Amino acid sequence: MSTDTTVVVSGAAVLLPGADTVRALAEGPAAGGAPVEPAEHVGRKGLRYKDRATQLGYCLTASALRDAGLLGDDGLTCAPESVGVVASSNFGNLDTVARALDTLREETVSGTSPMDLPNASSNVIASSAAIRYGLRGPNLMVCNGQTSGLDAVHWAATIIAAGRTDRVLVLGVEPDNDVVRRLLGGARAVDGGAALVLESRPAAEHRSATVRAVLGPYRRSAGEPGPDRGRRWELPAHLGHASGAHGVLQCAAAVGWFDAGERGPVHAVAGAAADDARADLLLMAPEAA
Image (cartoon, rainbow, N blue to C red):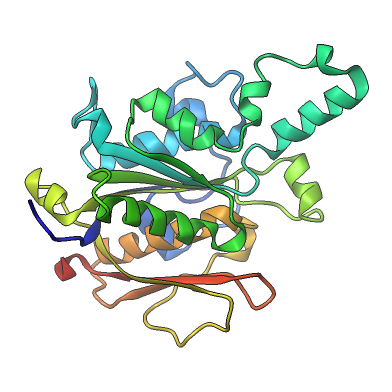
């Protein structure tokens, strides 16, 4: 049994207005992009009664798994138990929860929809992606403020290093809607996100997967950030608040840079001085594997 605990990125996907590839994300999404239409990516079947964040999660899941060579026309190309899911979103089903609370206040429980209530669970994005694509490994939802995306990547890597599963799909997604904008004081959210497929190095080598990046050290603290340890990707202001998707988007941008030939390390950083914590993660080029 291998003792190598190195975790690599073998697949990545991005869906944002103005960017639908990791290269486009790394170069900087253009302003004025059209909103993502989930039905164009995964068809209309199964989208009804699902909130916007879950629909976007479906699209990112399919795209990232295909990019990693794990999803074909007939379904998964690996054992379902070998793929876990860790999702990150702070606003994901906020609209569903707000609607359910409004209904309870105005009409009592008799007015609630049986189709809405299952979507009120904070784990709905991670669980729905797993159910739709048959991913039977560990399943976790992270709703942890500004560090949430990088925390999700860290927990996915920890699950793999602990031997719980060979690979984990990491989702970072935030919807844009009226409820979210009220929470943000009128500002908009990104209405999209990114996904990564993380694998242990031995698992990736066993199936001859293409390594796109290598995960380096992760740190989380309540103090001031340390010095930059590599190139950093900045979220274009016109995209809005990325929140729980921010860390995953940074990692996806790093993959885009490495795909384009960059070889220096990329430093992903989440959280500011006003937040309760900061997190950072170093990503290295594929040769580091």
